[in-house]
Length: 212
Ligand SMILES: N[C@@H](CCC(=O)N[C@@H](CS)C(=O)NCC(=O)O)C(=O)O
Image (cartoon, rainbow, N blue to C red):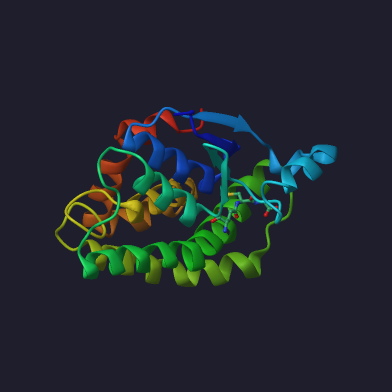
């Protein structure tokens, strides 16, 4: 069987979610660098793989796929290795709910509304959109409380084993925790902080972390 290929950049949250899934399954893969923000003339070729110009995209045995939700579920179902999705109907629904919350709220607000505005833009000497930060900051406690409540006293977000819900949230929180107020907000939710410490020590997380 050919090695699967993942196209994208190591700084991307969504590429990292796929890399975590591949690593947790124990799958050897090839990461083909695509810097979507400076593709220039190469973008036409890449658009054949991902017509919306987003990363990641994926190929396995001549089967091409994009959208992280589809890629990660394919990775889980097409290969041997520990299951990354629960089999129980309710747990699976909870996992899908958390992934949807990550896509719909946490990525746009905590990564773009806070990390990009307060960390990336500051590093690039670009002006921060204060209105955008204020909106995200008001919502951040709501998102963190929701995650802490789902977690309760259990080690993983959606099941008694690690699932795609954990693999979605971890790269997003990794960026959020670089915001000055991020770690203070996390420490107010000890079960979520314990989850984060459990996640960040995993080999998949350590190997996919960007150098400081
Ligand atoms: N719905 C897509 C989202 C992927 C996504 O937003 N990727 C970001 C990088 S983390 C991207 O390609 N951004 C480039 C752009 O928006 O121009 C998925 O699930 O794969």
